[in-house]
Length: 293
Image 1 (cartoon, one colour):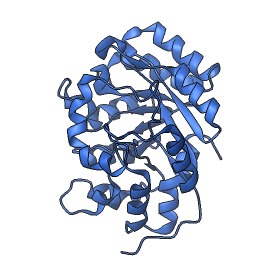
Image 2 (cartoon, helix red, strand yellow; image 1 turned 120 degrees about the vertical axis):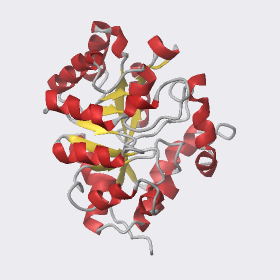
Image 3 (tube, helix red, strand yellow; image 1 turned 60 degrees about the vertical axis):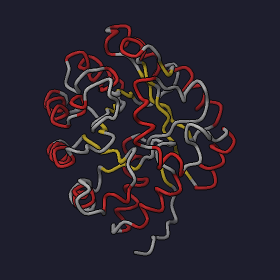
Image 4 (cartoon, helix red, strand yellow; image 1 turned 180 degrees about the horizontal axis):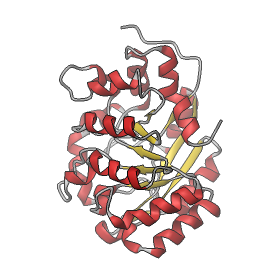
């Protein structure tokens, strides 16, 4: 299939700039480098050949990104490190309106996490909350999460949760089951929730949750888009439903450098999508979620 010709910008819902403050990692993620070795090599930004910050910024300029979402993480309780909200906010401030920051807090910290989230939004200007549940060793519907979900509703910001298999052998893959997200949305129907990555190997389960709940978006993050059109990959239902009844809830993202940006855009362009739907995936849905229009 011939790639589509786009005349509109895109929004990358997940990217990790190559700065020491933000591109932090830990031993619990070592297995990701094995799983994503080939894809990261294609970005020329794998663990051995990190691109420079000027190259990173120039890439998004050249490709015509309207916005890029950069996410903080606080894993101090479970894995002993954090990507600070202040560092993400400073990166976005320094490099312009193209970059939008999400806060990261540690649900195990109770009221401290609530206060940090409020400060991150009201004082630092961050626009959402990022909870990588498998790294917190909590299910999406763990009661420790509920005060944070309530605060997100109060602050009128979306929350991003890891909703898929994870490849860390230091924690359980069960933490990412989409079924737990259904329970959250029953209790918090006003919450704007993004499930990213998009649910594999439980893609149909995630699609059912999104179909049931109008405030659930699906982030096509950390997956090569070409697999949505590969038979028996497990991702095919995302293409079927994302081209039809859930076309307003699919959001493009790379989790760069795990997935190369230019290559993934080309793969999106090659998918058998209606052009109006492709624009929603690449731009309009994220713009609506983030309150940009």
